[in-house]
Image (cartoon, rainbow over the protein chains, first blue to last red):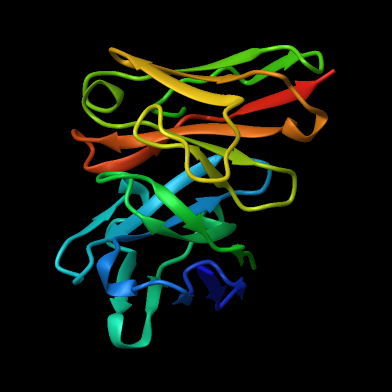
Length: 119
Length: 110
């Protein structure tokens, strides 16, 4: 059974940093693109970033470029999102998803991790 | 303002059919596959349709997708109360080099 489990949720002050992790199981992690998608409270889905199987290509939504970094550790079946210079508008549930919207679909999703940016 | 345009809400009676539209342009829908996602209340999204019109295993054939030019459509027949959810279209935008979603459509089964 495919499982994606996000961790690292929390409350952080504006300007602060937080690192989300996503641990994958039930599939061969290094053969899939991986993505992060977020959803602000009461709002729709927003694609955040994705990363190629070997980490050689990364793409970001404009609003997080220069502040967020997506990475992966294939040896540990893990995906990461390092978030710096956080803003109130980054408050959202962050979902880890298998796949890429550029080369297919997001076919498996984690349960999400809530990130709250507030003073 | 989302890159892809969906109606905010649709409604229909149980057993009826409903369609949800998703409008884009040549940079996104016009040149890439479209997926549709269902998000039940309090749950993570789940893919219903991928590659415009393909269903993952386990998705009933009451759900179907189509694409024509720069627009896509999700159709749901034989509506059930359990279909009440938010539905999102999504694809890749070549100009933005980014994934894009529609704003979401809330389905109410009256």
